[in-house]
Length: 423
Ligand SMILES: *[C@@H]1O[C@H](CO)[C@@H](O)[C@H](O)[C@H]1NC(C)=O
Ligand SMILES: *[C@@H]1O[C@H](CO)[C@@H](O)[C@H](O)[C@H]1NC(C)=O
Ligand SMILES: *[C@@H]1O[C@H](CO)[C@@H](O)[C@H](O)[C@H]1NC(C)=O
Ligand SMILES: *[C@@H]1O[C@H](CO)[C@@H](O)[C@H](O)[C@H]1NC(C)=O
Image 1 (cartoon, rainbow, N blue to C red):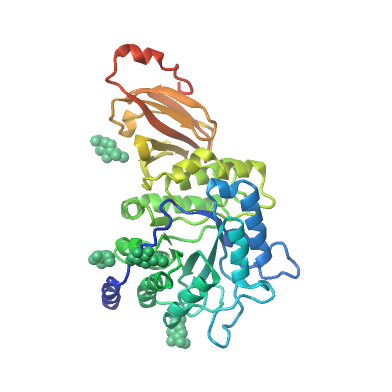
Image 2: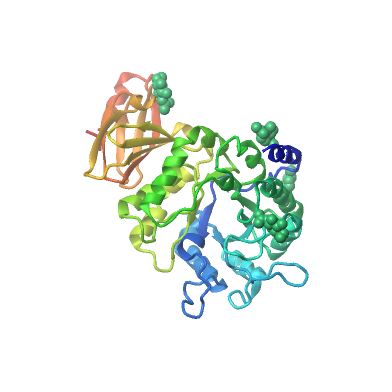
Protein backbone atom coordinates (compact mmCIF):
# COMPACT_ATOMS: atom_id res chain seq x y z
CA UNK A 1 0.00 0.00 0.00
CA UNK A 2 2.85 2.40 0.81
CA UNK A 3 4.33 1.73 -2.57
CA UNK A 4 1.03 2.49 -4.25
CA UNK A 5 0.59 5.78 -2.42
CA UNK A 6 4.04 6.93 -3.43
CA UNK A 7 3.48 6.00 -7.04
CA UNK A 8 0.15 7.78 -7.17
CA UNK A 9 1.69 10.88 -5.61
CA UNK A 10 4.51 10.85 -8.14
CA UNK A 11 2.19 10.96 -11.14
CA UNK A 12 -0.15 13.72 -10.00
CA UNK A 13 1.88 16.37 -11.79
CA UNK A 14 1.53 14.81 -15.24
CA UNK A 15 -0.43 16.64 -17.89
CA UNK A 16 -4.12 16.34 -17.36
CA UNK A 17 -6.09 14.73 -20.17
CA UNK A 18 -8.25 17.82 -20.69
CA UNK A 19 -9.08 16.82 -24.23
CA UNK A 20 -12.40 18.64 -24.22
CA UNK A 21 -14.22 15.44 -25.24
CA UNK A 22 -17.42 13.87 -23.93
CA UNK A 23 -18.98 16.88 -22.27
CA UNK A 24 -22.11 14.72 -22.16
CA UNK A 25 -22.08 10.95 -21.65
CA UNK A 26 -20.78 9.19 -24.79
CA UNK A 27 -23.23 7.19 -26.91
CA UNK A 28 -22.48 4.43 -29.33
CA UNK A 29 -22.03 0.74 -29.83
CA UNK A 30 -19.49 -1.64 -28.30
CA UNK A 31 -18.95 -5.21 -29.42
CA UNK A 32 -18.21 -7.03 -26.19
CA UNK A 33 -21.42 -7.97 -24.41
CA UNK A 34 -23.14 -9.33 -27.49
CA UNK A 35 -20.24 -10.63 -29.59
CA UNK A 36 -17.53 -11.37 -26.99
CA UNK A 37 -14.41 -13.10 -28.30
CA UNK A 38 -15.99 -14.93 -31.21
CA UNK A 39 -13.08 -15.27 -33.63
CA UNK A 40 -14.54 -18.13 -35.65
CA UNK A 41 -15.28 -16.44 -38.95
CA UNK A 42 -15.32 -19.75 -40.78
CA UNK A 43 -18.41 -21.15 -39.11
CA UNK A 44 -19.96 -17.89 -37.86
CA UNK A 45 -19.03 -15.16 -40.34
CA UNK A 46 -21.90 -12.83 -39.37
CA UNK A 47 -21.05 -12.78 -35.66
CA UNK A 48 -17.29 -13.03 -35.44
CA UNK A 49 -15.04 -10.11 -34.47
CA UNK A 50 -14.05 -8.81 -37.90
CA UNK A 51 -13.96 -5.58 -39.87
CA UNK A 52 -17.18 -6.75 -41.53
CA UNK A 53 -19.03 -6.69 -38.21
CA UNK A 54 -17.93 -3.13 -37.44
CA UNK A 55 -18.69 -1.91 -40.97
CA UNK A 56 -22.17 -3.41 -40.81
CA UNK A 57 -22.82 -1.83 -37.42
CA UNK A 58 -21.56 1.50 -38.78
CA UNK A 59 -24.03 1.16 -41.67
CA UNK A 60 -26.90 0.51 -39.29
CA UNK A 61 -25.90 3.38 -36.97
CA UNK A 62 -25.79 5.76 -39.91
CA UNK A 63 -28.89 4.56 -41.73
CA UNK A 64 -31.34 3.61 -38.98
CA UNK A 65 -31.46 6.90 -37.11
CA UNK A 66 -28.97 6.06 -34.37
CA UNK A 67 -26.21 8.47 -35.37
CA UNK A 68 -28.54 11.41 -35.64
CA UNK A 69 -29.77 10.75 -32.09
CA UNK A 70 -26.19 10.83 -30.79
CA UNK A 71 -25.01 7.21 -31.03
CA UNK A 72 -21.69 8.08 -32.70
CA UNK A 73 -19.05 5.63 -31.48
CA UNK A 74 -18.43 2.25 -33.09
CA UNK A 75 -16.17 0.49 -30.65
CA UNK A 76 -14.00 -2.56 -31.00
CA UNK A 77 -13.36 -4.59 -27.83
CA UNK A 78 -10.94 -7.45 -27.15
CA UNK A 79 -9.84 -10.07 -29.72
CA UNK A 80 -9.18 -7.80 -32.70
CA UNK A 81 -5.43 -8.41 -32.70
CA UNK A 82 -3.06 -10.94 -34.11
CA UNK A 83 -1.45 -13.12 -31.46
CA UNK A 84 1.89 -11.35 -31.84
CA UNK A 85 3.19 -7.85 -32.45
CA UNK A 86 5.13 -7.24 -35.66
CA UNK A 87 8.92 -7.19 -35.85
CA UNK A 88 9.06 -3.55 -34.89
CA UNK A 89 6.92 -4.21 -31.85
CA UNK A 90 3.81 -2.62 -33.30
CA UNK A 91 0.33 -3.96 -32.69
CA UNK A 92 -1.29 -5.62 -35.69
CA UNK A 93 -4.91 -6.57 -36.26
CA UNK A 94 -5.68 -10.17 -37.11
CA UNK A 95 -4.89 -10.34 -40.86
CA UNK A 96 -7.75 -12.70 -41.71
CA UNK A 97 -10.45 -10.87 -39.81
CA UNK A 98 -9.23 -7.30 -40.47
CA UNK A 99 -7.59 -7.69 -43.91
CA UNK A 100 -7.84 -3.99 -44.75
CA UNK A 101 -6.35 -2.88 -41.43
CA UNK A 102 -7.54 -0.42 -38.83
CA UNK A 103 -6.85 2.83 -40.78
CA UNK A 104 -9.19 1.64 -43.55
CA UNK A 105 -11.84 0.75 -40.99
CA UNK A 106 -11.41 4.17 -39.36
CA UNK A 107 -11.85 5.81 -42.76
CA UNK A 108 -15.00 3.83 -43.39
CA UNK A 109 -16.45 4.69 -39.99
CA UNK A 110 -15.53 8.37 -40.41
CA UNK A 111 -17.11 8.48 -43.86
CA UNK A 112 -20.33 7.44 -42.15
CA UNK A 113 -20.12 10.41 -39.76
CA UNK A 114 -19.11 8.14 -36.88
CA UNK A 115 -16.11 7.64 -34.62
CA UNK A 116 -13.99 4.55 -34.09
CA UNK A 117 -13.05 3.18 -30.67
CA UNK A 118 -10.43 0.51 -30.02
CA UNK A 119 -9.45 -1.69 -27.08
CA UNK A 120 -6.19 -2.48 -25.36
CA UNK A 121 -5.10 -3.68 -21.95
CA UNK A 122 -2.54 -2.17 -19.64
CA UNK A 123 -0.66 -5.34 -18.80
CA UNK A 124 1.18 -8.29 -20.21
CA UNK A 125 -1.86 -9.54 -22.13
CA UNK A 126 -5.42 -8.48 -22.85
CA UNK A 127 -8.03 -10.30 -20.80
CA UNK A 128 -8.42 -12.82 -23.63
CA UNK A 129 -4.68 -13.31 -24.05
CA UNK A 130 -3.74 -10.99 -26.94
CA UNK A 131 -0.69 -8.69 -26.73
CA UNK A 132 -1.06 -6.15 -23.93
CA UNK A 133 0.44 -2.71 -23.47
CA UNK A 134 3.15 -2.94 -20.85
CA UNK A 135 4.46 0.27 -19.29
CA UNK A 136 7.34 0.34 -21.74
CA UNK A 137 4.95 0.24 -24.71
CA UNK A 138 2.44 2.87 -23.62
CA UNK A 139 3.88 5.72 -25.67
CA UNK A 140 4.36 3.68 -28.86
CA UNK A 141 0.88 2.15 -28.70
CA UNK A 142 -0.71 5.56 -28.15
CA UNK A 143 1.11 6.77 -31.28
CA UNK A 144 -0.08 3.75 -33.24
CA UNK A 145 -3.70 4.40 -32.32
CA UNK A 146 -3.39 8.06 -33.24
CA UNK A 147 -1.76 7.21 -36.59
CA UNK A 148 -4.57 4.78 -37.33
CA UNK A 149 -7.17 7.52 -36.84
CA UNK A 150 -8.73 6.03 -33.72
CA UNK A 151 -11.05 8.32 -31.69
CA UNK A 152 -11.36 6.43 -28.42
CA UNK A 153 -9.37 3.93 -26.40
CA UNK A 154 -10.75 1.53 -23.81
CA UNK A 155 -7.82 0.41 -21.69
CA UNK A 156 -8.51 -2.73 -19.67
CA UNK A 157 -6.49 -3.89 -16.66
CA UNK A 158 -5.96 -7.66 -16.85
CA UNK A 159 -2.48 -9.10 -16.23
CA UNK A 160 -1.15 -6.05 -14.39
CA UNK A 161 -0.50 -5.13 -10.78
CA UNK A 162 -1.90 -2.19 -8.81
CA UNK A 163 1.48 -0.53 -9.10
CA UNK A 164 1.51 -0.98 -12.89
CA UNK A 165 -1.95 0.56 -13.14
CA UNK A 166 -1.10 3.51 -10.89
CA UNK A 167 1.71 4.36 -13.29
CA UNK A 168 0.22 3.18 -16.55
CA UNK A 169 -3.17 4.90 -16.70
CA UNK A 170 -1.79 8.41 -16.09
CA UNK A 171 1.05 7.60 -18.47
CA UNK A 172 -1.38 6.59 -21.21
CA UNK A 173 -3.40 9.77 -20.64
CA UNK A 174 -0.25 11.79 -21.13
CA UNK A 175 0.79 9.73 -24.16
CA UNK A 176 -2.61 10.15 -25.83
CA UNK A 177 -2.45 13.87 -25.22
CA UNK A 178 1.07 13.99 -26.68
CA UNK A 179 -0.13 12.48 -29.97
CA UNK A 180 -2.06 15.68 -30.64
CA UNK A 181 -5.10 13.66 -31.75
CA UNK A 182 -8.19 14.00 -29.56
CA UNK A 183 -8.72 10.45 -28.31
CA UNK A 184 -11.32 9.79 -25.63
CA UNK A 185 -9.97 7.62 -22.85
CA UNK A 186 -11.98 4.90 -21.10
CA UNK A 187 -10.19 3.50 -18.07
CA UNK A 188 -10.98 0.17 -16.44
CA UNK A 189 -8.62 1.07 -13.60
CA UNK A 190 -11.13 1.55 -10.73
CA UNK A 191 -12.87 -1.77 -11.47
CA UNK A 192 -9.55 -3.49 -10.71
CA UNK A 193 -9.14 -1.68 -7.38
CA UNK A 194 -12.56 -2.38 -5.91
CA UNK A 195 -14.12 0.79 -7.28
CA UNK A 196 -14.11 2.82 -4.06
CA UNK A 197 -11.92 5.24 -2.14
CA UNK A 198 -9.36 5.12 -0.65
CA UNK A 199 -8.06 2.59 -3.22
CA UNK A 200 -9.57 4.69 -6.01
CA UNK A 201 -8.89 8.40 -6.28
CA UNK A 202 -11.81 9.75 -8.30
CA UNK A 203 -10.38 13.26 -8.37
CA UNK A 204 -7.32 11.94 -10.13
CA UNK A 205 -9.38 9.77 -12.50
CA UNK A 206 -11.44 12.78 -13.50
CA UNK A 207 -8.29 14.51 -14.68
CA UNK A 208 -6.98 11.62 -16.80
CA UNK A 209 -9.97 9.62 -18.05
CA UNK A 210 -13.22 10.58 -19.82
CA UNK A 211 -15.02 7.55 -18.43
CA UNK A 212 -14.17 4.63 -16.25
CA UNK A 213 -15.55 1.23 -15.40
CA UNK A 214 -16.15 1.12 -11.65
CA UNK A 215 -17.55 -2.36 -11.19
CA UNK A 216 -18.12 -5.84 -12.61
CA UNK A 217 -18.74 -6.63 -16.28
CA UNK A 218 -22.41 -6.68 -17.18
CA UNK A 219 -23.89 -10.04 -18.25
CA UNK A 220 -27.07 -10.67 -20.21
CA UNK A 221 -29.39 -10.99 -17.21
CA UNK A 222 -31.64 -8.87 -15.03
CA UNK A 223 -29.78 -10.13 -11.98
CA UNK A 224 -26.61 -8.58 -13.38
CA UNK A 225 -28.38 -5.24 -13.99
CA UNK A 226 -29.74 -5.26 -10.44
CA UNK A 227 -26.37 -6.02 -8.89
CA UNK A 228 -24.86 -3.08 -10.79
CA UNK A 229 -27.69 -0.70 -9.89
CA UNK A 230 -27.47 -1.74 -6.24
CA UNK A 231 -23.73 -1.25 -6.09
CA UNK A 232 -23.91 2.17 -7.76
CA UNK A 233 -26.75 3.27 -5.48
CA UNK A 234 -25.27 1.92 -2.27
CA UNK A 235 -22.02 3.75 -3.06
CA UNK A 236 -23.48 6.87 -4.60
CA UNK A 237 -21.93 9.22 -2.03
CA UNK A 238 -18.49 8.23 -3.30
CA UNK A 239 -19.39 7.87 -6.98
CA UNK A 240 -21.95 10.53 -7.82
CA UNK A 241 -19.72 13.58 -7.22
CA UNK A 242 -17.00 12.07 -9.43
CA UNK A 243 -19.13 12.43 -12.56
CA UNK A 244 -19.45 15.58 -14.61
CA UNK A 245 -18.83 16.92 -18.11
CA UNK A 246 -15.87 15.04 -19.58
CA UNK A 247 -15.70 12.45 -16.76
CA UNK A 248 -18.28 9.70 -16.29
CA UNK A 249 -18.86 6.64 -14.15
CA UNK A 250 -19.52 3.69 -16.46
CA UNK A 251 -21.88 0.96 -15.21
CA UNK A 252 -21.16 -0.90 -18.50
CA UNK A 253 -23.12 -1.61 -21.67
CA UNK A 254 -26.84 -1.60 -22.41
CA UNK A 255 -28.31 -5.08 -22.80
CA UNK A 256 -31.43 -3.89 -24.61
CA UNK A 257 -32.02 -5.96 -27.75
CA UNK A 258 -30.42 -9.12 -26.39
CA UNK A 259 -31.85 -12.17 -24.62
CA UNK A 260 -31.82 -11.68 -20.85
CA UNK A 261 -34.23 -8.81 -20.20
CA UNK A 262 -38.00 -8.63 -20.38
CA UNK A 263 -39.66 -5.61 -21.98
CA UNK A 264 -40.10 -3.89 -18.60
CA UNK A 265 -36.52 -4.68 -17.59
CA UNK A 266 -35.15 -3.34 -20.87
CA UNK A 267 -37.07 -0.10 -20.38
CA UNK A 268 -35.80 0.06 -16.80
CA UNK A 269 -32.15 -0.40 -17.75
CA UNK A 270 -32.26 2.31 -20.41
CA UNK A 271 -33.99 4.74 -18.06
CA UNK A 272 -31.71 4.02 -15.11
CA UNK A 273 -28.63 4.48 -17.29
CA UNK A 274 -29.95 7.83 -18.57
CA UNK A 275 -30.72 9.05 -15.05
CA UNK A 276 -27.30 7.89 -13.81
CA UNK A 277 -25.61 9.92 -16.58
CA UNK A 278 -24.04 6.66 -17.75
CA UNK A 279 -22.33 6.23 -21.10
CA UNK A 280 -24.90 4.70 -23.48
CA UNK A 281 -23.02 1.97 -25.28
CA UNK A 282 -25.38 -0.50 -26.88
CA UNK A 283 -24.10 -4.02 -27.43
CA UNK A 284 -26.69 -5.74 -29.54
CA UNK A 285 -27.15 -6.82 -33.13
CA UNK A 286 -28.41 -3.67 -34.83
CA UNK A 287 -29.06 -5.68 -38.02
CA UNK A 288 -31.85 -7.65 -36.39
CA UNK A 289 -33.02 -5.54 -33.43
CA UNK A 290 -36.81 -5.47 -32.95
CA UNK A 291 -38.82 -2.32 -33.40
CA UNK A 292 -39.79 -2.48 -29.73
CA UNK A 293 -36.19 -2.55 -28.49
CA UNK A 294 -35.19 0.12 -30.98
CA UNK A 295 -37.89 2.39 -29.63
CA UNK A 296 -36.52 1.97 -26.11
CA UNK A 297 -32.98 2.86 -27.17
CA UNK A 298 -34.15 5.71 -29.40
CA UNK A 299 -36.52 7.28 -26.85
CA UNK A 300 -35.96 10.99 -27.49
CA UNK A 301 -36.81 12.21 -23.99
CA UNK A 302 -34.51 9.67 -22.33
CA UNK A 303 -31.71 10.71 -24.67
CA UNK A 304 -32.41 14.32 -23.77
CA UNK A 305 -32.13 13.40 -20.08
CA UNK A 306 -28.92 11.45 -20.72
CA UNK A 307 -27.38 14.30 -22.67
CA UNK A 308 -28.42 17.11 -20.34
CA UNK A 309 -25.75 19.83 -20.43
CA UNK A 310 -25.43 20.16 -16.64
CA UNK A 311 -23.94 16.67 -16.58
CA UNK A 312 -25.06 15.87 -13.04
CA UNK A 313 -25.36 12.19 -12.22
CA UNK A 314 -28.70 11.20 -10.65
CA UNK A 315 -29.08 9.62 -7.24
CA UNK A 316 -31.41 7.22 -5.53
CA UNK A 317 -33.44 9.45 -3.20
CA UNK A 318 -35.95 6.96 -1.81
CA UNK A 319 -35.86 3.30 -0.95
CA UNK A 320 -39.32 2.36 0.28
CA UNK A 321 -40.31 -0.71 2.27
CA UNK A 322 -42.79 -1.34 -0.55
CA UNK A 323 -39.72 -2.07 -2.74
CA UNK A 324 -40.23 1.08 -4.73
CA UNK A 325 -37.14 3.18 -5.32
CA UNK A 326 -37.10 6.76 -6.56
CA UNK A 327 -34.18 8.25 -8.47
CA UNK A 328 -33.73 11.92 -9.24
CA UNK A 329 -31.43 13.63 -11.73
CA UNK A 330 -31.28 17.44 -11.72
CA UNK A 331 -31.34 18.86 -15.24
CA UNK A 332 -30.69 22.22 -16.86
CA UNK A 333 -33.36 24.95 -16.63
CA UNK A 334 -34.57 23.72 -13.21
CA UNK A 335 -35.95 20.56 -14.79
CA UNK A 336 -35.52 17.09 -13.28
CA UNK A 337 -35.74 13.49 -14.29
CA UNK A 338 -37.78 11.52 -11.76
CA UNK A 339 -37.60 7.76 -11.99
CA UNK A 340 -39.90 5.43 -10.06
CA UNK A 341 -38.52 1.91 -10.02
CA UNK A 342 -40.31 -1.20 -8.77
CA UNK A 343 -38.27 -4.05 -7.32
CA UNK A 344 -41.49 -5.99 -6.79
CA UNK A 345 -42.30 -9.29 -8.45
CA UNK A 346 -46.08 -9.40 -8.00
CA UNK A 347 -48.36 -6.91 -9.77
CA UNK A 348 -48.29 -3.25 -10.85
CA UNK A 349 -47.89 -1.14 -7.71
CA UNK A 350 -49.72 2.11 -7.04
CA UNK A 351 -47.09 4.40 -5.49
CA UNK A 352 -48.50 7.49 -3.87
CA UNK A 353 -46.30 10.49 -3.16
CA UNK A 354 -45.89 14.21 -3.84
CA UNK A 355 -43.07 16.41 -5.04
CA UNK A 356 -42.82 17.80 -1.49
CA UNK A 357 -42.48 14.22 -0.30
CA UNK A 358 -39.47 14.00 -2.62
CA UNK A 359 -37.97 17.17 -1.12
CA UNK A 360 -39.14 19.62 -3.75
CA UNK A 361 -39.59 22.89 -1.91
CA UNK A 362 -40.02 25.42 -4.71
CA UNK A 363 -43.27 27.31 -5.01
CA UNK A 364 -43.44 26.56 -8.72
CA UNK A 365 -46.18 24.96 -10.70
CA UNK A 366 -44.78 21.90 -12.47
CA UNK A 367 -45.62 19.87 -15.49
CA UNK A 368 -44.21 16.45 -16.30
CA UNK A 369 -44.00 14.26 -19.36
CA UNK A 370 -43.97 10.51 -18.97
CA UNK A 371 -41.02 9.50 -21.17
CA UNK A 372 -42.46 6.15 -22.24
CA UNK A 373 -46.15 7.01 -22.68
CA UNK A 374 -45.70 10.63 -23.75
CA UNK A 375 -48.51 11.63 -21.41
CA UNK A 376 -48.37 15.18 -20.00
CA UNK A 377 -49.12 15.55 -16.32
CA UNK A 378 -50.08 19.15 -15.55
CA UNK A 379 -50.91 21.27 -12.55
CA UNK A 380 -48.44 19.76 -10.12
CA UNK A 381 -47.65 21.81 -7.06
CA UNK A 382 -45.14 20.64 -4.49
CA UNK A 383 -47.88 19.43 -2.18
CA UNK A 384 -50.08 17.79 -4.86
CA UNK A 385 -50.43 14.11 -4.09
CA UNK A 386 -50.20 11.81 -7.10
CA UNK A 387 -50.08 8.10 -7.82
CA UNK A 388 -47.85 6.38 -10.34
CA UNK A 389 -48.52 2.79 -11.35
CA UNK A 390 -45.23 0.92 -11.72
CA UNK A 391 -45.02 -2.55 -13.24
CA UNK A 392 -42.90 -5.29 -11.62
CA UNK A 393 -39.22 -4.74 -12.45
CA UNK A 394 -40.37 -1.70 -14.39
CA UNK A 395 -40.08 2.05 -14.24
CA UNK A 396 -42.17 5.16 -14.65
CA UNK A 397 -40.00 8.10 -15.70
CA UNK A 398 -41.02 11.73 -15.68
CA UNK A 399 -39.29 14.63 -17.34
CA UNK A 400 -40.40 17.30 -14.86
CA UNK A 401 -40.13 21.04 -15.37
CA UNK A 402 -41.46 24.17 -13.66
CA UNK A 403 -43.85 26.15 -15.82
CA UNK A 404 -44.40 29.18 -13.64
CA UNK A 405 -43.76 30.64 -10.22
CA UNK A 406 -46.75 30.53 -7.96
CA UNK A 407 -46.50 34.18 -7.00
CA UNK A 408 -48.61 35.19 -10.00
CA UNK A 409 -52.20 36.42 -9.66
CA UNK A 410 -54.48 33.60 -8.60
CA UNK A 411 -56.61 33.87 -11.75
CA UNK A 412 -53.84 32.45 -13.93
CA UNK A 413 -53.90 29.05 -12.27
CA UNK A 414 -57.41 28.45 -13.49
CA UNK A 415 -56.02 28.58 -17.04
CA UNK A 416 -53.76 25.60 -16.52
CA UNK A 417 -54.98 22.50 -18.28
CA UNK A 418 -56.69 20.11 -15.94
CA UNK A 419 -54.34 17.68 -14.33
CA UNK A 420 -54.27 14.32 -16.04
CA UNK A 421 -52.51 11.10 -15.33
CA UNK A 422 -52.40 11.23 -11.57
CA UNK A 423 -55.12 10.19 -9.23
C1 LIG B 1 -3.51 18.11 -24.15
O1 LIG B 1 -3.67 18.74 -22.89
C2 LIG B 1 -3.74 20.16 -22.96
C3 LIG B 1 -3.90 20.73 -21.55
O2 LIG B 1 -3.31 19.96 -20.60
C4 LIG B 1 -4.93 20.57 -23.79
O3 LIG B 1 -4.95 21.99 -23.91
C5 LIG B 1 -4.84 19.94 -25.15
O4 LIG B 1 -6.00 20.24 -25.90
C6 LIG B 1 -4.71 18.44 -25.03
N1 LIG B 1 -4.54 17.86 -26.35
C7 LIG B 1 -5.16 16.75 -26.74
C8 LIG B 1 -4.93 16.32 -28.12
O5 LIG B 1 -5.90 16.11 -26.02
C1 LIG C 1 4.31 -9.54 -16.64
O1 LIG C 1 5.43 -10.13 -17.26
C2 LIG C 1 6.66 -9.90 -16.57
C3 LIG C 1 7.80 -10.44 -17.42
O2 LIG C 1 7.56 -11.78 -17.73
C4 LIG C 1 6.58 -10.58 -15.19
O3 LIG C 1 7.77 -10.32 -14.46
C5 LIG C 1 5.39 -9.99 -14.44
O4 LIG C 1 5.24 -10.65 -13.21
C6 LIG C 1 4.13 -10.11 -15.25
N1 LIG C 1 3.08 -9.36 -14.57
C7 LIG C 1 1.88 -9.88 -14.29
C8 LIG C 1 0.94 -9.03 -13.51
O5 LIG C 1 1.54 -10.98 -14.63
C1 LIG D 1 -6.25 12.42 -5.43
O1 LIG D 1 -5.73 13.00 -6.58
C2 LIG D 1 -5.74 14.41 -6.55
C3 LIG D 1 -5.38 14.91 -7.95
O2 LIG D 1 -4.24 14.31 -8.41
C4 LIG D 1 -4.77 14.88 -5.47
O3 LIG D 1 -4.74 16.28 -5.41
C5 LIG D 1 -5.24 14.30 -4.13
O4 LIG D 1 -4.31 14.62 -3.12
C6 LIG D 1 -5.44 12.80 -4.21
N1 LIG D 1 -6.10 12.34 -3.02
C7 LIG D 1 -5.65 11.35 -2.27
C8 LIG D 1 -6.46 10.97 -1.08
O5 LIG D 1 -4.63 10.74 -2.53
C1 LIG E 1 -35.21 15.26 2.38
O1 LIG E 1 -35.41 16.15 3.46
C2 LIG E 1 -35.29 15.50 4.72
C3 LIG E 1 -35.72 16.52 5.79
O2 LIG E 1 -35.07 17.74 5.57
C4 LIG E 1 -33.86 15.04 4.89
O3 LIG E 1 -33.70 14.39 6.12
C5 LIG E 1 -33.55 14.07 3.76
O4 LIG E 1 -32.18 13.70 3.81
C6 LIG E 1 -33.82 14.68 2.40
N1 LIG E 1 -33.67 13.66 1.41
C7 LIG E 1 -33.08 13.87 0.25
C8 LIG E 1 -33.02 12.70 -0.65
O5 LIG E 1 -32.58 14.93 -0.07
